[in-house]
Image 1: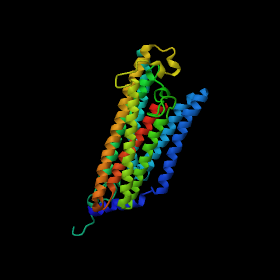
Image 2: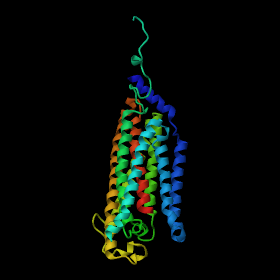
Image 3: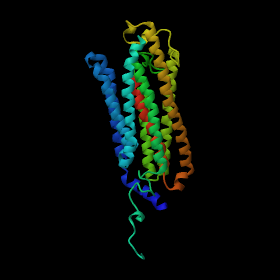
Length: 114
Length: 242
């Protein structure tokens, strides 16, 4: 039993991909993405009415990028075993299902309210 | 029959899934933290998706740029996103100090772990303080659970032109309830995270993890703290940007 635990720990040391340089890189990426969102919200949307339809999809794509960097690097999921990555990512697909079902449903609620 | 070859059924198997070790190659507590966070992710996405569905089905929705346009104590009007930008920055930075604590834990450097943990706790308290100000400001405007301001048109784009009072009232009610419920649930997570961070820091001070020989506990609570940051990224997008 004790050998097993040491094995797990030793593996951790080997797989570890987060040194200080990388942490700062991820921080800079997160700040850059957030500032792009701010530029869209404070400059492009008020000044260019034609840009308006693209704003929300862009926000969501940028948010998903931020989520990827937080989960992959800060939460270290990128450096775990593939089986753990799948165990966490695959159930998230259920959320996509709920999004599809409820957004579809909400279009019917509009008629109920009228 | 004396020294026959071992039958296939008695052979010792050594695949990851044949028992005796973690197939995921992570420690038990960390795996359970991941599964807890997965269930928490479902809770938060149910809340956010319900918000999306109610908003899609509403005739109009209070404009984020008009509801959130003040910096409490400094600017009353015309500064959308400034205060919430500060909150986002605080939470991202406290996430970074948490990773740095984990990184220091890998090197078994107790002093550094302590420093980064204390900074993380300060970041958590700063975020909670900002959120209290934000809530207080919205409350002073008249928003609260099942309560809306008396004058609504100022919170809608173009002063709510062409909208019936009932439509504005119903979507404002939905907005107020959803905003306080979702940010409240998130704030409760931050609060819990701060409490657990404090407990962990006390343990670091007492040398619990040094005696144990590993700072793995920092990684587990670190996962929780990053998850709180992750949820905020989505709350920020869907309440303040969209």
